[in-house]
Image 1 (tube, rainbow, N blue to C red):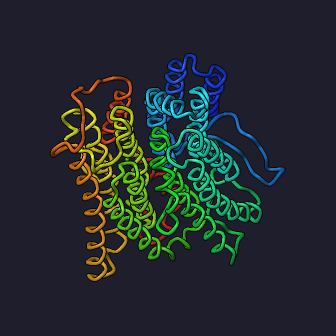
Image 2: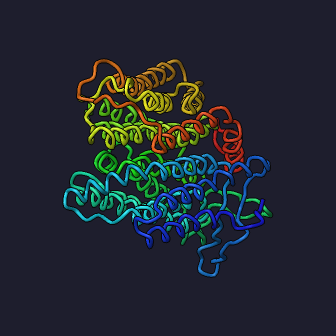
Image 3: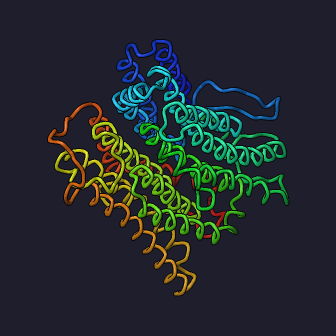
Length: 518
């Protein structure tokens, strides 16, 4: 379906325009710009709600660019069944973290000024934040590899500057580490994308057929180079996704970023690489992905368990959450690697559940940083549920999303991923089933362990540091967290449109082309 107005371009341009206005205004009217930015970032949520209500296969802007004379193809903006869960999660989290950032970044900027530093003012932060949020949405809206890469670079540059200007610790070194690693990933992916586009004659991965966006078929002209191109794309996305072996940059960058940015980096940005794996590798190289399935599933389990055990060892709350993000990306890869409808639906649901859950947990860490004198050491926490009952409840909901317990959306995502694993190996004999059952039990146990051991250590037991007698104040700082949790619960109840949308996309690209995939 073609929209009557260019709502996708508006939903990207409006936050950036508001960010420019905030930058020019400096510290003046920062509350107004923060709330206006939040409202503009909720527009994509309304777009997807309309898309689901219409029953269409896709929704596309009426404004696009014809670059076929340059062998680039067409540049549309739109959503389909695969991208809609991603857009929902990005819209919810970026909108309410914008409000959360008012108090947090006000505190952080004043803290830096008190230490004799001269950080850019709040208006500059709001501008960079809005560019970061809008370009992440652009990644989900894109339909062409060149368009996708432009938006992806926008997320990298804006997030790099946010860490460099407002981060903690040795932020100059850490921001450069983040930039170099993720840029290596992006350029590796770009090398594969460029070879694909040049040989195939266009860079489109969604094309307009009538009024619907339709996925292009498998790469036909690459021949023996298809494996090389697929490998370049996979390695580049694996770096961005922080899978085992190329994950080393993430615990440093995401733990030392300012907390509102951590709440977007760890769940939302790295998950976009998982979305891209499903979008490109399954669509262009289905048979290669089938041949890689044992390796991909092994890498997924290794990522889940290794990062989960490392999370258990951490004493810094934000660093623990960073390692848990690596572990959650293992689940996302696991669902994709099954090459089943169950697994792929589970992966896209996991993107949304992880975005909601991990945003809540990073925002919880930010509450302690702002209101308890930069408290991050889990060893000095304990009994905090007495002082912060609402924050404790919201953190519990966040951990429930990670560990897959109802009424969190993570329940549906992990259920579908497990069903996908079972479907993949159900007919391969008893040995395979016993082995897969053992691996699943190990993975799920490690996730539950770091989630609920951490919950107990932070919020229950005896206090291990001076907490003061002040009670929890319910302000927009915490109400923004509550809004994310409420909408996360709504997603748990109204999961059917997301499931149906991803399944419809799979039917378009796979049909009966892969064994066991429906």
